[in-house]
Amino acid sequence: MSTIDRRAFLAVSAGSVGLLGAIPLATPHRSRTSPRRPVIISSRNGMPAVTRAMERIRQGTDLLEAIVEGIGLVESDPNDMSVGYGGLPNEDGVVELDASVMHGPTHKSGAVAALQGIRNPARVALEVLRRTDHVLLVGAGALKFAKAVGFTEEDLLTDRARKAWLGWKASLSPHDDWLDAEQQVDTSGKASGGGPPPDVPFTDGTIHVSAVDPRGDMAACTSTSGLSYKLSGRVGDSPIVGAGMFVDNAVGAAGATGRGESVIQSAGAFQAVRHMAEGLEPTEACLKVLTWIADHTRRHDLVNDRGEPRFGVVMYALRADGLWGSATMRKGRTFTVHDGTEARSEPCAYLYE
Ligand code: GLY
Image (cartoon, rainbow, N blue to C red; front, side, top):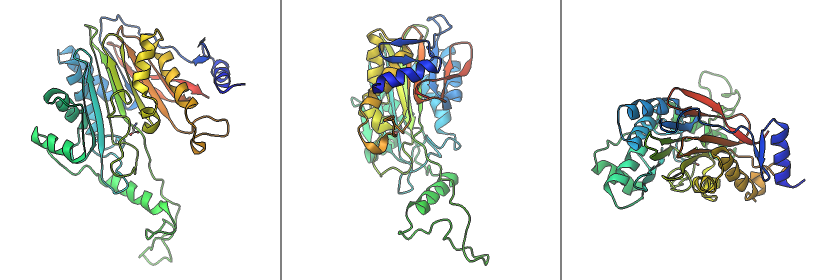
């Protein structure tokens, strides 16, 4: 059985409802609303974002402004360690943020990468879109721009994220000068600190939102603190237009979360939108991108003994008529949909059991 045939078999035996060539379709998602109503989809952490964005759209706020405001709630939440303030830092203990936005009607995008000290990178990306002829500002230049247009610099490393980073450093190697958890000295009198190694949080999480308004205009935004404990200066897929998000106003919008390196090397969001342009439904388009990523993952350490990627990627797609879908590498993920009546979680279609 070829790799694709095996995947198709797995999904069919899991109860999927159809095949597109050799691509398994787990759960096709059809919008239950008129395409004339706004529809917003997001990653699973996007419930507050889609709720706020829908409120703003109903009040007449510009679509992209509305979703950036919604994402701002999650960026400012210290408990979401995958994005904005409270995000897990890089290997040096510094929070570096990536974000991008795209406005369908003008086909203009804006993005920032490796931005330090500003809790709402999506809003800075929106200012890049609005105020400059550029698309992507990085590092010190992005911070300089943000301060110039009125953002306030602050320390984004929360105590919780700092402790997670210290736990990660302690767990790295028995041969460096950071003592492992069991070696650490307990000054209360015991011989050693003892105890199990700390459960070091790790994330390649991100927030993505795509939206269509009652006129059929579209916008998208993706924001992240990126891969936990990444090399300083590492940029993921989130600020890369065509990878972490993409909009073609006549066709649809798409975005990605998960292992950014794989999404960049597949132009994930662009692929998903092109698949929709060729006639695939959003869920089919997402699964086709994931299949492409799986088939182009050649490094042995990134696949299991069945040749399936060990890492996670989730794709999200929204068509201009309001049809929506999402798919993940492995069963068990959800995403968020607001179809104009309510915000709810929906299961992602998947490539592997
Ligand atoms: N998808 C987020 C990242 O890899 O940075």
